[in-house]
Image 1: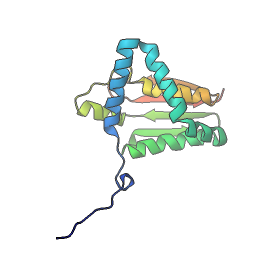
Image 2: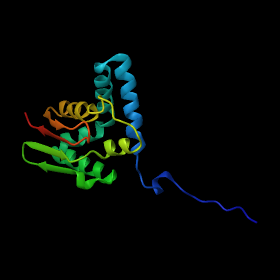
Image 3: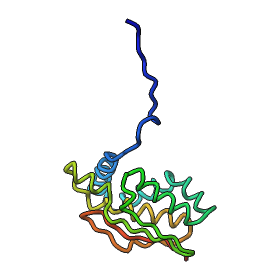
Image 4: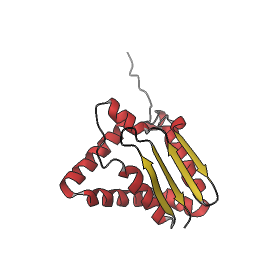
Length: 155
């Protein structure tokens, strides 16, 4: 019998990274418990500047539309498009999340998000806003569900 091989690439698979959220939270817990709240914030800010550099560059060119498209695509990837509403006006981008799919997943596998997990939204978006010379405000955040309301705004 001859050899059978399958040519398969990672790109052929559906991309879901739900376990990433729990692993990230474990890392934030490590930093927070050993080095304090500022270490968590510093790490997330440094991460955001590097990882989101292409998004920041695009938003400098096209404005809040780039952020809107990014946020909507993330929730689509997470198979939770219905959980997010993004409203863009001339001077503001307002985001409402009815329940965070990452928080729901973590809880479904027995992981309770740490007190630092909220910063994956607040510190990351504050950093993006700072890089764009605009404002960011976390209006509300529910620790139990990850439901949130926040906004980016022109200064």
